Image (cartoon, rainbow, N blue to C red; front, side):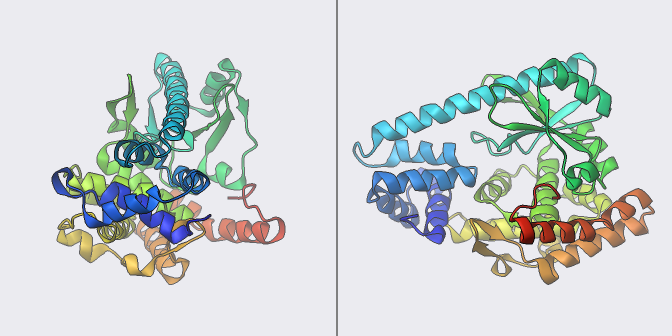
Length: 361
């Protein structure tokens, strides 16, 4: 990139977070905007590709179209925005058709993660359902969707992936459980029971409650991928700034799943990163600050994302989750969680040999 990775991350973050209170432009926002305005078209194209990786492309285009001075690259930005709008419209239309098929059969379903980034979307359509394997496969057979070969991790997590004609994103279906090894069966049922219907574009979709959005994001970021995208920081800070999180409920949900320290850590880290990029500081509840196992200074930007240290920080979160499920007598969750180190080791070996861990992880 003509713009370094740390610069690109900072500029994108400041364009979203440093605008200031009541819409007044802060110094960080003005500086980021002025720098972007000096970039060549090819450099801005690279920056927008990076924004797409961070799941903030739509939001970035909106800021640039509104705030870049004069007519700098206006035609290009309008074209790129129109292309992205068509992609999102296609995703929403496909999601609506899929949901109608599940609901028409009386099968509860919820869209996870995909719409948390709105007006951006995720890289796939992520569903959670209580349907059986046979019912899920039957629904996608009606769409002539091609079922993808599952990885070892997919099998453990009890999820399917489908490729649908005319849709560039995969459809990922979690069947009755959550977590990298499918350890959270009760949590999955609770997420489905708390789903809320909300409007995105011209359509209504069932999505997790705000508390469940944070929980699901934590499972993905702190217990599976061990990295945080810019969109995660924006999403969580947005929930905090709008007072949308019921922390008593969030803590109760998280403690039952054994992941309260991970949830508190993700909130704390995301908030601190947001503030570092110009967002106003928010007073976090004392129980969140005390439960967090490390702060944002322990994380670092590397290979596109904010990395969560595996040892000892992530390892401690894992063992806390393992011990918590053992104490509660959830032998299924405990047994599945013990498989995680073996799966991670296999993924590491596969990556070292082939450069790809997709068949494992």
